[in-house]
Structure formats: C-alpha cells, structure tokens
Image (cartoon, rainbow over all chains, first blue to last red; front, top):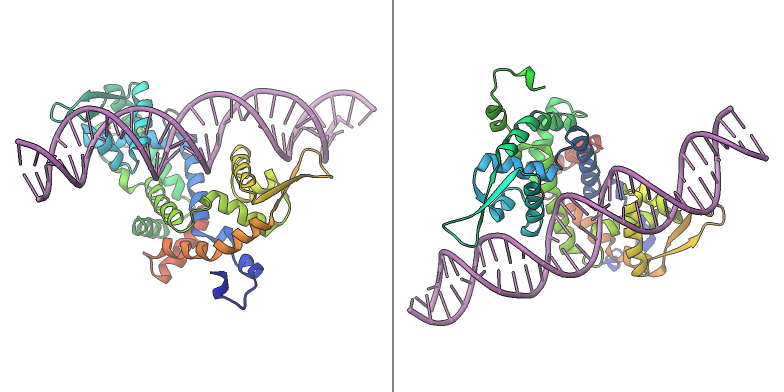
Length: 149
Length: 149
DNA sequence: CAAAATCCATTGGTATACACACAAGTTTTT
DNA sequence: AAAAACTTGTGTGTATACCAATGGATTTTG
C-alpha cells in the first residue's frame, strides 16, 4: 500500500494522518460528551439501560433477542443489560408459551414509573447534546447521522 | 421540566420518546458501523490501539497520561491500551529522567512500520465511513461533529 | 417425515471506558 | 522549609460491546 505512493516517504504518509480530523475520532469524542451529559442528568440508569427500558415501554412484551435488535445490541450485550434491569426490578421476564426458547420481557410498574419520570430529562439530554448547533444545523446533523446508519 | 407541559399525561410523554430519533442512539449506531468497517479493514489493531499508535508516531516521546489526553482516553483506559501495544512490541517505554513519576513512550521500529503500513487503510476507512454522504455533506458533517466536541 | 438450517439464550474471552481510591513524586503556596 | 495541591501511574469495580461456541427449540427444505 505504501508502495503505491512512491513520491511520498513513509514519514510523509504518516504525517498526512491527522487523528484529530478523522471521523472515527470525532464521533468518539462527540459521543463521550453526550455520555457525560447523560450521566449528569440521569443517575439511575446508564444510557444503554435507558434505551432498553424505553424501547421495552414502546414495544410491550418482546423476547430478549428482539429487544436487542430493536436497540442495536448483540445477544451477549442485551443479556447483561436486561440482567441489570431485572436486578433493579424495572423489567420482568416470563417464558413465552408459544416458543420455549424465548423469554418474554415486560417493564414492571416500577419500570414504567421510572421511564415516565426520566423521559423529560432524556429529551433535555438530546437538546443539551445538540446545543452547540443552531436549529438548522441540528436538523442537518440528525439527517446526516441517519444516512450513516 | 415535566411541569412545563401539564397537558401531557405521563404516558403521552412516554409515547413522545422515540429512541430511534435521539442523537445518542444515532451516534451509537453510526459508530457501530464505523467500528465494523475498521475491523474489516485492519485486523492487527483495534481502532483505539491504532489511534494511540498514530498519535505516538505524531508526537514522538510522551508520557502515558499525556498520550491519553491526546487521544481522549482517561488514565485507566490508556494504560490498558499501552499495555497491549507493548505486548505486541509496537511501543517501548523508558523512565523519564526529568520526572520519576513518568514513563516515556515511543513507537518501536516495528510500531513505525505497522503504522506506515496501515495508514493508507485508515484513510480508506474514513472515506468508507463517510461514503453514504456526498462531498458537500461530508464536509458539513465533519464540521458539525467538530462543533459537538 | 427427516435433515438441514435457523433462532434463542447463555457462556467465555477480549477490549474499551470511566469512576474511585491510592502511593509516590512534583509543583505551588504559605 | 513545610504544608497544600496537584500529577502520574496503578489497581479495583462496574458496564458496555462484540466474537465465537454451545445446547436446546423451531422452522424450513428436501
């Protein structure tokens, strides 16, 4: 690969790589800032746990894997998240009578209460995260983000 | 906050929360896609390890904590990353004669070679990640991302 | 119907990522 | 110079996050 640009010395190729301008690095930092805003606003749940709880409140009763797909987490990840939500009595599980492989998940009354209590804060977190952008920029940013999904 | 919208019942507030439209969720998914592209293109290093190695090649000899700051990783995180880079003989450490607390880090010859070998692939990863956007959109996206940092 | 393919939940392993506490070294204050 | 404040590296604990493998259940195929 380096041999394809014979005029550039290897060091020049290296110099040309500015970490701070790479999408990956910028996305990581933007996400760090968002996670920090989240942690400051909601201490009862992690962002991931809140996402799972919110999706479960939206979907009703679904299997663990289905919840994982809906929240973009793989099987191993969603299991840990659900375990922690169950430990906090926010989610209840029961065997699916239709399919013996599945575990049906549902928010508990406490889970519903917590979700409704923190939902406004969650909206505020979205606003705070986007605060450095004006309204037009926010719209564009969300649109472009969606294209990158 | 909730009291500012008294006409909405809690359930309505809950219904109004669409996880799939939240910045945090979109950024997480966009990042997942990027990490997948990275893993497909570069198997020798993780994105984090590559970032640390690239920054070290850019900066020369710096302490572990300084490298962590330059790559946006906290002390505990950068330690693990550097440990793994040292285990692969990509980075060497020596005591700082100026400050007995510090460990000076430097890329090994092998570290330089690997960085120069994969740097073109890293550029390609950035291009692939942004590929769903046209050129104008890419510029805007990077600009807005930078504002969110 | 039987075999193959798929799906589900779980487990083990590796790698971020951050909070917190700690000890030793360095700088700043007083 | 002595005290206070800070920095550096390390260790512990918790929480994502994903891969690969596994055993049991279900669906699809032949």
